[in-house]
Image 1 (cartoon, one colour):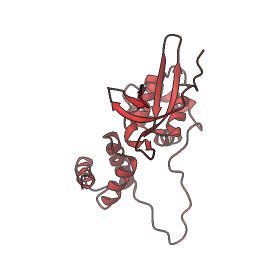
Image 2 (image 1 turned 120 degrees about the horizontal axis):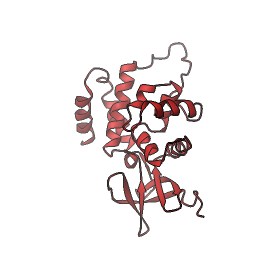
Image 3 (image 1 turned 90 degrees about the vertical axis):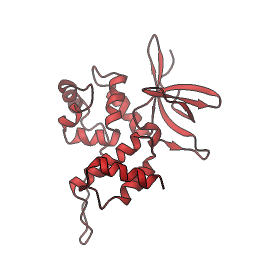
Image 4 (image 1 turned 180 degrees about the vertical axis):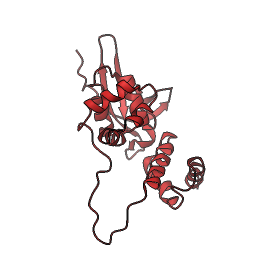
Amino acid sequence: MVSPEMIGRLTGRVVEEPDGGLVLDVNGVGYEVVVPLGTVGRAGRDTEERVILFVHTHVREDALSLFGFATDADRLAFRTLISVSNVGPKTAIQVLSSLPAPELGQAIARKELGRLTGIPGIGKKTAERLLLELKDKLPVLDPVAPRSPGAPAPPSAASTSSAELLARALVNMGYRQAEADRAVEQLKDRLGEAPLPDLLKEALAVLSK
């Protein structure tokens, strides 16, 4: 039996991006890897600008599949998701395509059932099962920290939400997280005011310079 830990990480160049995955060229060998949406844009690079993926090797009697992730946290979230009854790799990838690990942890911690049922393919029963079985098992993105006297007030909820949505949209389009963050920072005065489609157009203009 092949160990699920046989391949833990791959570093290479993306040569193909078929629906639902990619082919990563690692020293002349092409690995077919299933990835959540936006993974390539968020993944780290080495000094030669090759993509670094954290890999889960999924073994069944009739198949061996590779699932790749931008961060170790995303891989951990995937492994935690597939430990839930009736949640397979395909469903776990769908969840992480909509909510990367920190956001998923946040949704679970806040018991945001609607956010989970908004994921394609996730019904109410599955969402309720995720809330129940993933409680305290995933990291949370933004724990509330005390604010020292005189410190600036945190951004409004609307502004924070717009920033998250804009950054995620850019990452899903293939931009790196650092690039998305740069565009969001330059548009911070518009967040919470302009509609997301307008913000996205402006962000693309910023990144094209």
